[in-house]
Image 1 (tube, rainbow, N blue to C red):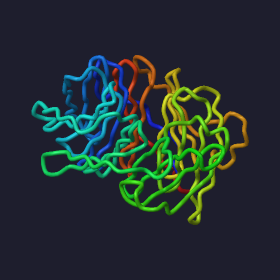
Image 2: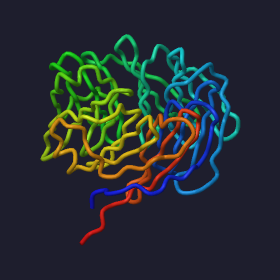
Image 3: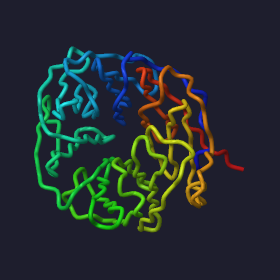
Length: 313
């Protein structure tokens, strides 16, 4: 059944610094968030208590990926990429990349992907207790990418007025794409992507327009969505889209709302005011059968909300 509501929000943990990035590890079920100034890594079990905070000797941080329960990768403010080895026992920092403008995490772990300023990409793979990087050329000019458990979703420039979304099998865009969708001209400045098997969202933090790409019958169809306020971050699950707003709201937009979108500001299927210190800054979705929406705030608080499915008649 489709999703219809969000539960009351619950504060899970706090880092007391601005949260910049989030990652989910499906097994054993962890959510990690990284803050900046100071840089701290918070790791929260999805289904229980026992969240932990680790202080990191980095000047700043933007993105995080979880390769295992003990190994993470962080993109720092100087665009260097660092592996954190042994999270639970005082991590060792090991530089594994440089000049990266984006870091994508894979929910199944083991692999992350860094996009370089020079247009190359680096696959970061866990090898026992080490993280090894392998740099490769990307065909064309990649603007953004995201990893799911089975695919790489890449937004390319120059393939249409607003670019092109390409869906590749595996953990890198090296195999040829199995699906493509030209993006509308209004999507040309959108620089982030959240991928899924039914819905992919191309967006920009602080913009009030999102490009939704719906997959149906083996084809992709792109359309622009308008919101009444700028979005702080976006997440997707199945055919639903989740958005965080600076006024403290997090909202669910189901597949029917997206399908019916006509250019006017989209009305949410459900909306909840978080009540956190600071503004919602980062979103992540964890779990499938009983999923939760995780929110990191600009003041360092980590909250979760259960995502409720519509009851059958």
